[in-house]
Length: 308
Length: 282
Image 1 (tube, chains in turn cyan, orange):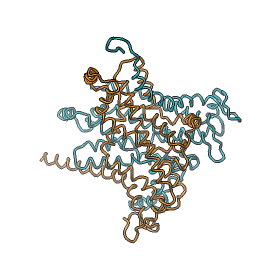
Image 2: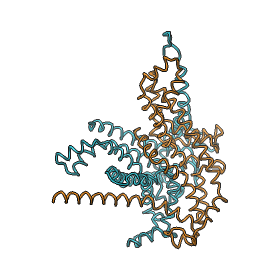
Image 3: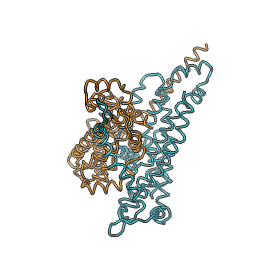
Image 4: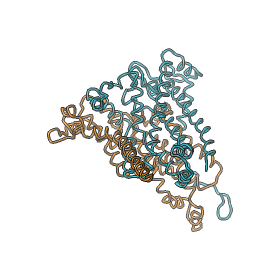
């Protein structure tokens, strides 16, 4: 920095501007993240001191007869949880977005209503759905009976084979607004002339979508996918609210977030273990990192290919 | 003949669009409306006629009186407001200051700090919880709102800085230079630039506010005491305790929903727009 007479001055103001944010971010985000990664290579001694134990925690997490089934189970469930979001939430989000961009009455109203559940807390949503699906109240059952599907009703949240898809669909119900709005914005951004030119050239509607709109919203599909991925592998609140820390029945709704919480804090007879907790967090970190890197590798390139 | 056919087709399509949108809107709205409706009914009628609107015979506020008498929801509300407002204030203040430095000056380390501060956009702060709790304990901030606020500031900064930096770099240098020639200090120029990015600040404010208000994880882990519980945690605990008191459960859900819903109905346009602002990041 040069002052008016051309002398170098120390840019104090830069420190003033940048300092507080960097300090706060470093102290309460980066330092805990890094220390957590480091802690996963330590183990707690009976006197509460930490000693270095190499990969022992990871070996235990992957192979121990107590912890391994929980870890692999949570990982498998989390993958299913994610796939349900990708296959249900994001396509429906795209469908709704493509309907919202059409010209017609009430689009603003529909948009406001469809996005509404997204702003509510997961705790509230979880409880609302627990009440609705509760056979005691019978709301879901009597609605299904009204459309002739009464015999299909089951207390899904209580059945190991249905509980995970049920909770995933509740999460889909809540967060559908996010992909919807992101796709909506992307679709609005496509110039009308482009579509008109294609129609004049004799493109069918399907061709317009798959050959023009789809490639142009591909970057958004990437963003939606990675946001879904990070959100799902970091999810906790909904399962904890609806099924508690044990993610029942029989751990059928256990995902990485609930496993992390249980391992760290312990529940009932199971004692909490900070370093094993850190180990689970490190695995979550690696999974999320892998997802982010894959996204950057795939989409940062594609975006360029399709740039107009 | 052909034209008529075409018109019928577009009319049919318009109808189809309305049907699909209405269907999904009902799916989105129904659970929320059902809970609100039934929270104003006697328990008997919650079960006997869940789909009916409350009327003179079925109306009751018993659930609300139970909640107000037995729960800490008022205190919880206060805590949530303090935590959210304070976090938001500091996120926007520190974030805009850092963004101003990153966008306005070429200095050594600019690229480094820009990258360093953006790591936190994709990596959730939750993953550092084990060590964060240790840190809070050593600072004596467990079960304090200050602890929560510090965590939320750190959590909110990366995205705020990222977005504001891109907005601030669009401000022409001539504007700032004119200020400098008039003898304004760099601090003065920061205050000159700030109003120019107001829309972005508004969007970020909304975008960061909702997750803080709705968070369960950190209140549960860092500040679970009755005195410091936020509304999300308070409701979660109350519902767990009163699970069999349907009136109380429904009323607590409604009370917890109402502030955010009102805010949403007033600011829905801005809120929806802010999602896009938040996602441009990636």
